[in-house]
Image (cartoon, rainbow, N blue to C red):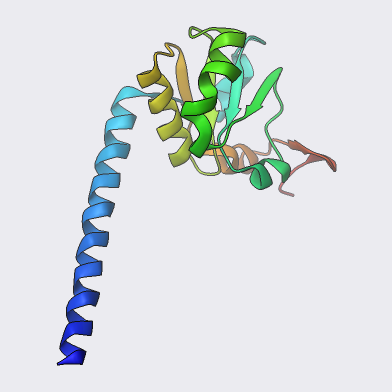
Amino acid sequence: MKNFHNQLEKYSRQCDELILNKHLKLLLDKAKESIESIEVEDLYILDNKLILIDVREPEEFGSGYINAHTVLTIPRGKLEFMAIDEVAKKYGQDSHIVTYCLKGSRGLLAAYQLKKLGFTNVRNLNGGISKWLSKGNTIHSYLGELTLA
């Protein structure tokens, strides 16, 4: 009987995981419909009023970031709490913002949340910093300028 209960619990956890994955996919799809993606090449043509928001965790940011005139590191988990003081009050809600993360999903969710908070000019870097590096671009860290090579 104990084995049966263990199997039932395992099955229940798998069902919960499938449901959560389905809800996450729906949330990401909704964010994709609402948020414009920007390609790596398009970052070059944006003006120096652009604000890049790196939504990775601090240790990820420490490994390297995309250099721009204004780069903010606001971890995804703190975005809603820091957006007003770190972005809106300093730069305005109409600022040109591009979010990014490692591969794109956290950046997309961050951009979606910023838009829901009232920011009007928000995009997400398609493919995140990984795609940035794969295109031969450099990142900056305390070690200096780095590439994938």
